[in-house]
Length: 216
Image 1 (cartoon, helix red, strand yellow):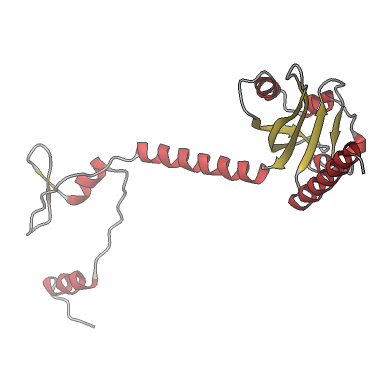
Image 2: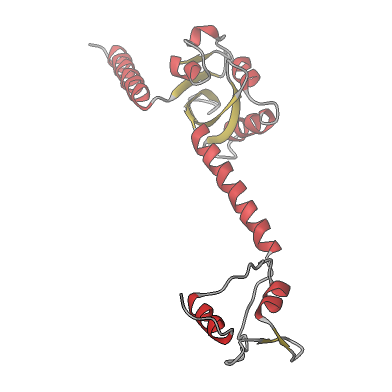
């Protein structure tokens, strides 16, 4: 077996192994021939967006560009070009892509240049994967909304801090001006708490006794 055929067989074997790994990890795969503009993709790339097969797409970069959310397209291409022009060691970006039903999914796009011209070092081929991260992004959004809600709630609460002097006999509280307040009045001015009044069993006994009522 000559050297050329051996290299070709090795390349085919590596590509088959890569295909098996990608199918097992449920990742979309794309391979871009930069000179011709042709982009090969696997079926998972399309299925991630709600399509049955990649045959429903054309094998070019417009397919990718048109599927990206309009607000994310400029950033996505900037990341690609930064890598092609040597400003970054890889393209790695999270962005939204249009699905068949008209919604959007979040994907993590991770790619690198895999082939360069031996003489000019010009990029010839770039390959990458798409991972569906919609679930994680939803959880992050819910977390951020919860944090914002808690932050707003904390901003609305007036907190009680420091040592609060309480009368050991009548349980009144001395306020900042040195006067004595009922505990309800003091807490109401320093928080959003509201009060309802009842009587505990011990006090009920004392109250009945003071009123001259006998125990039933």
